Image (cartoon, rainbow, N blue to C red; front, side, top):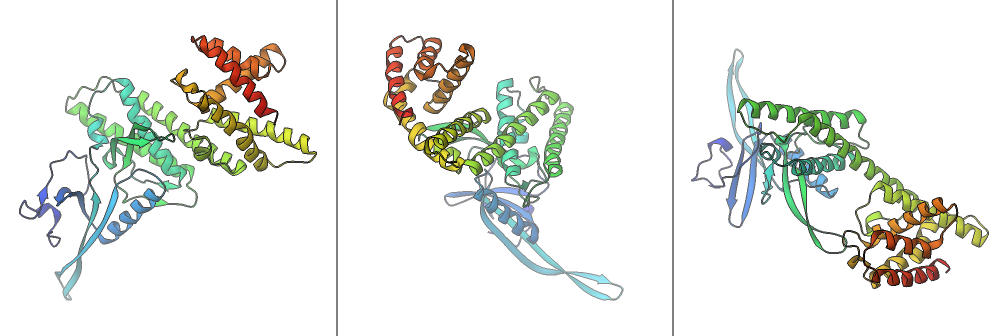
Length: 380
């Protein structure tokens, strides 16, 4: 490749260029194909290239979607001759290129934002970006230039914890030049990233308005409000997961094989605390929360979930899974007991849940059998 040239001077004789839509960039970026691979090449300074490639590696190690770094190239060219009153001086002439593997089937946020999608699809875009920003901040990463111009969006096929493929809209950090890593990110840095992204929304709105591009389903104030609400939800959820795992030493994803939510974590913690009290009473000594958590998962939760799987409960509740079904039944039991002003027991709770939420009458007998099995588990 003609690395000795500035990127803007590369010609079709120098490289096989790809015509790809791209967002606004303050750097020159070209997309090239080389044998079986496609790359994005950005010209910058030596220090910026070194920092950015290192940042991509760190971000990926946190499990966050960003560009895949291929490396960087530094070119030392003939020094620039500068004539001064005291004689000829020579200025260092160094350029560098950041090379990333080209993400397939992605769109820059700035282009995607142009289209007048239905409101529900617009909100999906905000979900993706809110989650990306929350993940960065949760890992004490400050973007520094959070904007449409520096992000991509893509439908990604991912395996869920049951091994099934599902498609999710994901936002990718596409420019790591300004990224900073902290031991603990401050609230002011988090707010700065959010405010800067809001500004990028305003700039694009103005550009589209000037170009007379009609985007009637977008609402700047609504979208900002939704984005910050979802960001707070994801950021607080990640903190709650940390707190739960610190207290119980149980990995949320590995232990429960689901995407957690705050209410589910609170319900699980409540059951673990009740189990802690039960074990302490049983053994006549204080049992630690971690010991109780391990015992509850092994001897109660896992056995009940296995029972649900044996009976193929998901066939009767297609919009649920064993984890959420378990929590729903326990929650139903709690509220039913409050209503009756006494503990109704698991058998009545399961029967009541089945009658209320399933139209399949054959399920009632199945749930009665499950209730008997659960009673055996609880009495162990």
